[in-house]
Image (cartoon, rainbow, N blue to C red; front, top):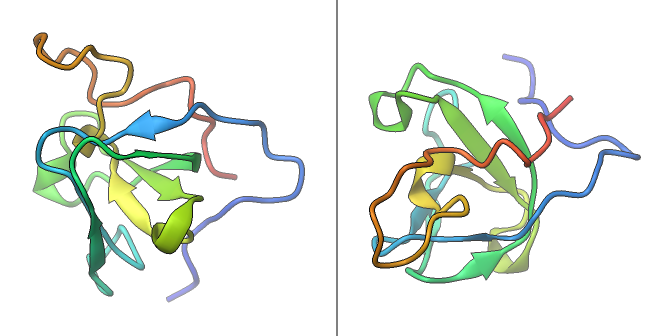
Length: 106
């Protein structure tokens, strides 16, 4: 299996993302869920590099996106985009499963 896509030099900047009330699991490969590692705690803001479409895992539907975390001990790990607030306000209804301002991984 070829390595999963990742950032390339010159990729655009993306906004910081904050995990929701359950935090976010992280994985080495979003296509297989292999390499699960330390969870990002709830209400933690991290930088993400880009988003990757891997909808085969039921937990990431309907959008199917994953973020490549680029911060802290989770740098280089993948987390489901729907585990983050994605611009929604804490305590308000969740309406965004993905922040489409995060660039697509090339």
